[in-house]
Length: 79
Image (cartoon, rainbow, N blue to C red; front, top):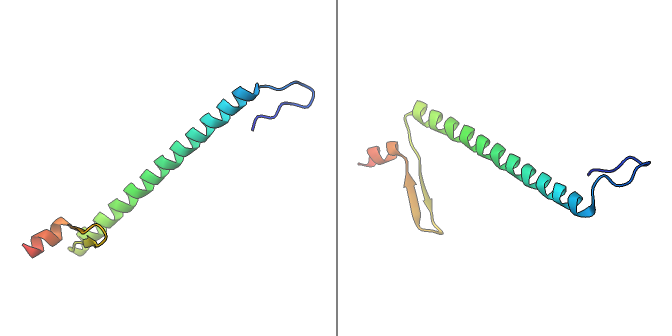
């Protein structure tokens, strides 16, 4: 990751190198998480806009957990 120039000694001790690599990995993971959250927010907004434009809703049933979800439009439709 941080290779020293050939004529000089190491820039970092092995422990420092390991710490830098660990911090770099944590930052990379955080950036990936934030990017995924932004993509999810965009996707959710698009779905909401499409459902509103179509004047419809969604209903889903998680059979494994025996849980269901109905959007407000479906709940109003079903009463």
